[in-house]
Length: 47
Image 1 (cartoon, rainbow, N blue to C red):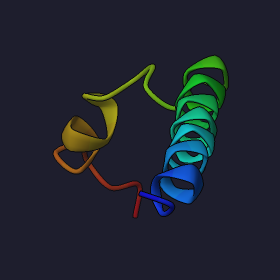
Image 2 (cartoon, rainbow, N blue to C red):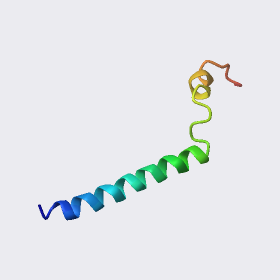
Image 3 (tube, rainbow, N blue to C red):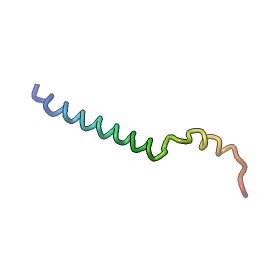
């Protein structure tokens, strides 16, 4: 039972950090263009 006093707050901190990372990634445009890199390989080279 005593381990719950450690694991519950630790899990809340972990979830908070992960949600913060996802929000940071969304605000910085990490998910804006998901198709661009996939089609970029099909383009012509400028050699």
